[in-house]
Image 1 (spheres, rainbow, N blue to C red):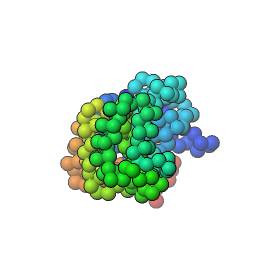
Image 2 (cartoon, helix red, strand yellow):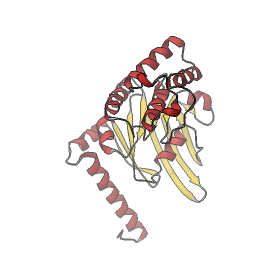
Image 3 (tube, rainbow, N blue to C red):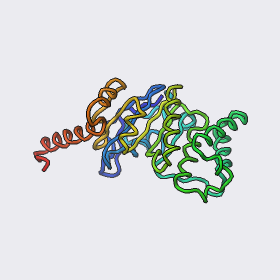
Image 4 (cartoon, rainbow, N blue to C red):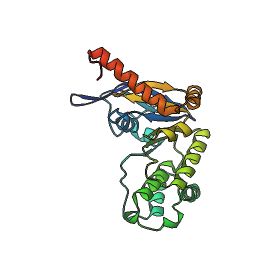
Length: 253
């Protein structure tokens, strides 16, 4: 459903992403992790068509995001790290607007909006203006808009940050259900414990490229190890740092 083929992104002389390849099939729930500056957000912005790669190809359900942007983006739900919403709409009006833009028929739209308001605990706030929402409530509204219409691919950049514990639990359960129904989900987060629990695959980025990719069986083995994903990630960072230092003649100290 989502494929990045040998994607590279330059910002002037800076290389943010280099020769990165990833593929998500229906039902994949891929966690994307890496240190600050690893290229995670840049990768996600290219995946949804907000940034054009310097080199490489991005496909959504076989459609090139930049050659067939409308067809590709109809199949994507996206929540960026920094959210901007229509502040003078109520929560319900915003979701109705998103549903109309996505071309969802009225009965389906109303049914899905009601379900999402319940899952994300926004029912009592549905008629308040978004400008009065807290940051957590804005994130809930953005998540509801992204999931509305059951897109083929859901891309989330630190999208679980700032949610209250009850909503966080409900949402993680709901996301697992969506993946089980065939949605491909790509979630970037620094909270390794969350990714360890809800994802069935993990990709680790460093210096703009994938340095580790684990499938469901390998991830389950990591979960069973002492320290789990956190220990695996820290060990990997030490190893890649040492390798980079050896290649440059720097012992890394």
